[in-house]
Image 1 (cartoon, rainbow, N blue to C red):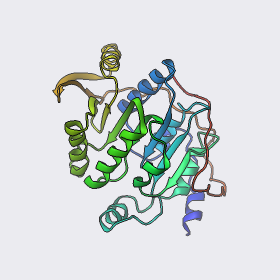
Image 2 (spheres, helix red, strand yellow):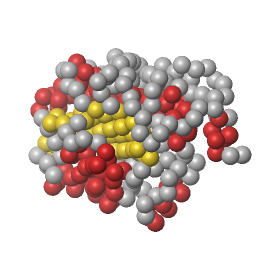
Image 3 (cartoon, rainbow, N blue to C red):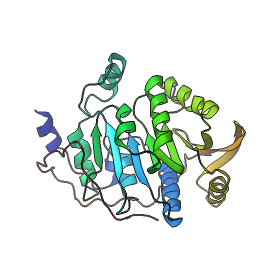
Length: 279
């Protein structure tokens, strides 16, 4: 069976939980809280995701995009990796990943696709304007050199108080992500806001106000344990989300049925969506 035929035979996701991926309720709650806070404060800026897999977190992020903003997703998808070590990682972990599957999943929840860069994440410095984003999710390569470069590029792309989220920063099979993350904290002024079991949240911008508001939000929930840890002079919050209750989910437009034969989008496709699904 061809890749296109196999993709077309997949059922459309009828809820976010049907989309394969690793995006747990605690992180959904934090994404929701941060992106909703930005909307309430009328903080404008674009969204960025490096590494999309099949679109689970991208679908969630896309619900918080406003009409004058752009959401850019960068992933190799089916393209060859730029070097041997990255190619081995891609073949081992993501051999069944295709761009068509991502697009089909995303279209099940949103009218328009994000801007798609089917390329190594190293291209974003040239493709995404400096100081244009308010939120960036980095979940691409697990190799130190690539993550280090992704963090450096994201620092320039984020606006003054933008938030960056790094995935797999403490997974035992991803020591390069940990080294790059804590290296950025130690040497670039990245301020550690909080951590969950899988993700690191930080900013190069204003810290005290968002930290205090996050503590207040966590203090009002009985499904998230939290504690504090001084890291690089900042009271980073540790969050245990084993009992976390997921926030309101993006609504799928479909019932379970076969995917239609939807043509793939060009390498760059615009997105202008109203903010929907915000709590």
